[in-house]
Length: 493
Image 1 (cartoon, rainbow, N blue to C red):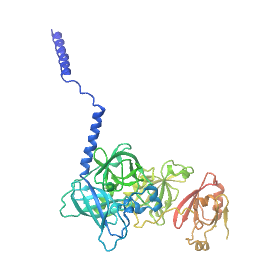
Image 2 (image 1 turned 90 degrees about the vertical axis):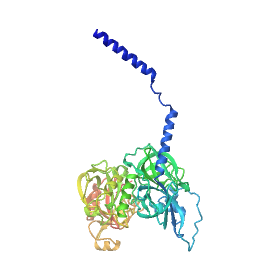
Image 3 (image 1 turned 180 degrees about the horizontal axis):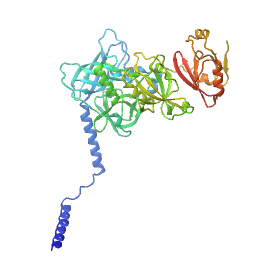
Image 4 (image 1 turned 30 degrees about the vertical axis):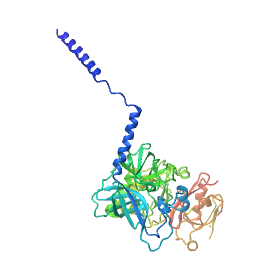
């Protein structure tokens, strides 16, 4: 009897479930058109939401200021003319830029920005507001207010302006994302005012991350997001956002019009700079005083270096800088900062940038195949950065016919002749044209201090070092050139 009851209950459950299935069929899978409509609505929602935090920035300059053509070019004032021609195509002039005398500032430039604090702080690009005598910001509802510059950072091209108009109440703040979590190929939406076309929205993807060496200036903080979302003059300073409506970058630079290659400052860096500009009025980076390369990209050096496969090569050292004081040497390979591995130049810059000025930082490095640690105290980036640049480059003398160098002892007479400090090493008195040394830009007056990590104090050591060196594989030659320590690799061809 009990078993019969169980069977009856089981049958009723099966029948009931069947009835429910008939009454409530499973929802049909969404069609491709349904999915497209959902994505379409997602773009619309993001644009509507973020646009409330985007502003159009109008700037006025005195008539003597640089032409609008220059101002429209992101980073244009930092680039030589020949470089601008490579990166930016011609475009119509917006107005006649002939000099005008005895006139008030004229509103002749425009860009974009994004509100980051309710009290009216706006993040934008430095080149948008640089040299501005007056600034006006306009929100999407048409309300326009006066603003002033609160701080600029030329190395990242980030600036913060603040609304000063007494009638202003509050701004709708944009949601800032985490650019470290951005993934290549995800959707990207740019909002701004290209060519005076306010609140234009373009859609694309994140094409790449960590783009550097876009600008021919090693002092620039270059860690750009690359996007194919259309960016044009006037988009500068506006947000690049993801599908969540989070700002992941500040649109900054284009690689020619209609190329589908634009660059944005990652929001993590932009936020860090902006916060400091608001609190301190400036952003001071920690500075080591070195010129560096990523080891994996340093083709000639990675073939001769020993004991390390990844890291950052110290190419040059500024005189009297933190690196020089700490005993860092050209051709050292830095592998970690305070225990955190660094594999690229940008990773090293990012780690050092935020270190407290004057605090002790531990560097792991490899020198001549041997791992070692070194303590260094970063200093504040000099107001006028001392150039640590490759100058590129004849008692008795010694000539190396294979490498093209003639050297002599660095005595007092030679030091005075070439205007260098007397000390240890041998001085180059002649460089033969068409030789490896000439090709590397080595010049007469450069002082050789080491060969393949072996100290050189006289001609005998110089000769012995070259005898044991493999000149066909490459010789690491440490030099002092106008006070800058650096190294070159000379290879017999």
